[in-house]
Amino acid sequence: MFCALNGCELQETRDHQVEIPCVATGQSFCEGPGQGSRDSASQKMHYYRYSNAKVSCWYKYLLFSYNIIFWLAGVVFLGVGLWAWSEKGVLSDLTKVTRMHGIDPVVLVLMVGVVMFTLGFAGCVGALRENICLLNFFCGTIVLIFFLELAVAVLAFLFQDWVRDRFREFFESNIKSYRDDIDLQNLIDSLQKANQCCGAYGPEDWDLNVYFNCSGASYSREKCGVPFSCCVPDPAQKVVNTQCGYDVRIQLKSKWDESIFTKGCIQALESWLPRNIYIVAGVFIAISLLQIFGIFLARTLISDIEAVKAGHHF
Image (cartoon, rainbow, N blue to C red; front, side):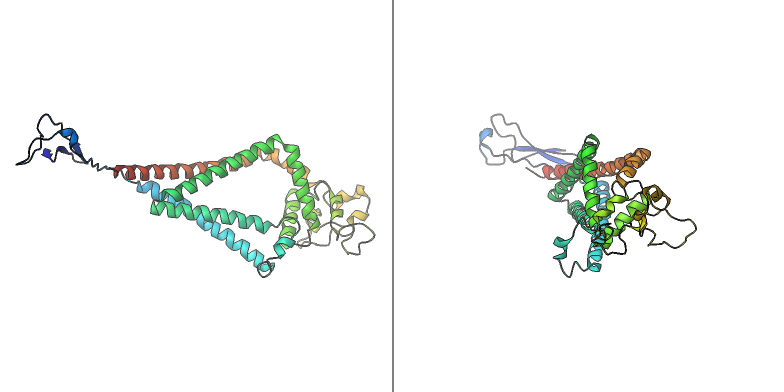
């Protein structure tokens, strides 16, 4: 349907309306009664565009569901971390954080929780409110994390000696604090039991701990011993013997392997990685695909929102 109105032609279709200016030749094509001829170039014409662009509900609520998982996981991590700190009395005395030796595993849990909670919140609110600023923040952070993970993987492969030295420093630092933090103690015990290893490079590394040190100045009952997680498990024993490592290092080294693991944990991890390379690669690829999927959803939703906003400009 076509009509002439105020110096323009209104073309109406089934889906949208667009106001199109008339082409004036001498006298205005849409001149009203009693109006003289005017110069068409002097007329002010307004263009109004009504677009049928809209935001996809599929992408919108799929991104919301994707982020609600992030948000809930972040809440769980934060809850576990704060509960662990409250059990250790850190929340009642925050100065204990600065007095901790070694690496507190709870700090890592809290950091992961904060990142996941923030990303999940930004993604959920950004998707529901169609807020481009929050969606760009979510998308940009995921991209940054993705490239950081990629950079860490490449650097770890290229600088294996440097990574080995950093892990040795990490392990030795936490050996010194073995009895000072229950979470740290459980982490080292789990690592040694799972990999059937003892110390960073061997049982002698436990001399770094004041309780297991063999020096004459030590009066600890654990002197010249190792933690129970270094002991070779006895299939006949159903109850864990936490004193199995006492006085083990007083014996000849040739007899150590009869009761404790003599392989260092760094060597154990180096031999574990090639055997499980496909599992490690599969986990890395799965995490990367999830991140790429989130980036795709966010960018698609941003494009839809921008298209709708552009359709209302005139």
